Structure formats: structure tokens, C-alpha cells
Image (cartoon, rainbow, N blue to C red; front, side, top):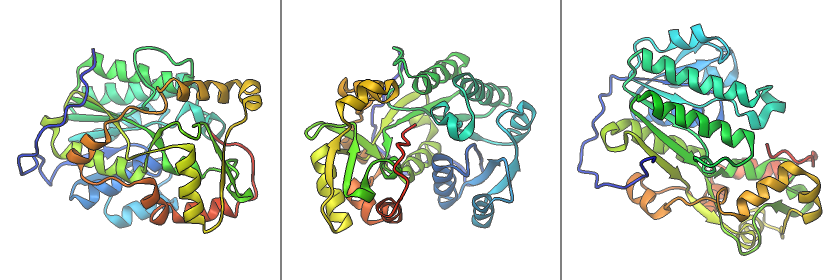
Length: 321
């Protein structure tokens, strides 16, 4: 049985050395970028695994102090080479749920995740942090892009590398995707008006992971479900209306759509069953990791440009994967 998160008192100085290097996969993506930024801010050396060192995001990381390492998830030799001389690894892969964007299948995602863990173990990496999803677990969901992460989790535990697995709730950033209706003065999602669904800002994922790397003995071999806030359909309507400065009407996705679209229908089932809605102990997380962004604070801060873009969007295609 997987060890579950049990908060422990912070007794003072963190255990890491400022001279240690962390290899960050997905460093130009949402989670990897947040982790790289948080680690740099805490004085870690960061090696950023990037496909294109000349991209704007890669150049920004380099300017912030990261070492860029050119590599590709499909190139095992580049993954192996990137492990040389690193203390820790942050592992995130392109999600098979975004196959239309990345061209990644379930099998691809599983292979990438297992390869990173195996190469880290072979290289003697001292701490692997893998980011999964709150719906992961021993029982399959029937959704390939969730079950792929469960398989990677199981492999990491099997090989015995010192690791920490984080299972984030839905990203606040995902609520700003096209297709939710904000440009039409409405907002649609899976939660019912009185049903809670947990969310987290990606910058808080970075914050939490950096603290985990700072104190490996405290968090080693734990699986930690993480979230920063819980929202309902009603609270989303209130929060979005207040942030937008105009009425936003909330609707759960219509049942006719959920019946017709098997992908969306299964996601709705997982929300209704509680598995995707989230079960993180936010109070304990706040006690351990410090203040985490509420949805209202995120809308007023880092999420404000995304909200403005969503309000002015013209693409109404649902983009939830």
C-alpha cells in the first residue's frame, strides 16, 4: 500500500545543500517551468531538459540562471546524458491526454516516465520527484491519460529509488482554456453548483516541489495529493463575475453533451464519484508548505492575464484534454 502524506513539524533548517543540481524535465512547460523557477529562487542549480534551447521560454530560463540541456523524451541517450552529476530529478512528461497537441500516446507517456525513472536509478540520483494526477491510484479509471500515470507511479515504487510522488488537482490555468464560454459571458465545467472540485495554481506546484527537494528525508517515499483551493459551480460564478467586472453565468456541461462525448462523460463521472474532484487535505498542506493561492487570489494575480485572454477569446472549441 502506498504511503500517504502525513505532515510533520518543521524543526528548522532544511537539509539540502545549495550546491546540488536538479534536472528538470518539461522545463518550458507549465509544471516544469514552475518547478525550475521555484528551485532557482531557493538557490538550487537547475539543469533544464529542453528540446529547443533557442525558444523564448528556454532563453528566459537561461537568463534566470538555469543550465540548458538539449534533449528529447524519445531519445534515451539524451535522457541518460542529462542525468550526469545531478542530485535530483523532477519528472513530468507530455500527457497522452494532450495527444492532439504533442502527438503522444498512452504508451509513449508510460515509456517516457519509466525511462526517466530507470535512468535516474541507474545514475544514482538521490531523489526523484514525479508529478502525477489526483485521479491516479491502484484502481483504473478507464481514462488512458490518468491510468498511464498510475503505471508510472507503480514502476517508480517497484524499482526502489528514493522518490516523492505529487498528485496535483486540476490546474487553475486549465479553467481559462478556450471552450469554457467566458467570451460569451458564461462558464461551463464539470462540477455541479453545490459540488466541490479542488484546484491548484501551477506556481504552487513549483513551490511545493522545491520544498520537497529541500527536505528529502521528510518527504521521501510519500505520495502527496496537492491542491490550493476547492471551488463549486456557484463559487466559480461568483469569483469569475467579480474578477471580470461583469456577470458570468455558470452551467455544468449539459447532460446531452456528456452522453454524446464519451471522453467528457467519463471525466464527469470521475468528478461525480469524487476521484477527480480531489481529496487533498488543504489545511495540512498549508501548514506544511505555507500559504497556497486561492482561486480568487490567483484570478487577481498570476491568472489575471489568462482571464483577460479568455474573456476576449474567439475560439469556442472545447479544449479539455
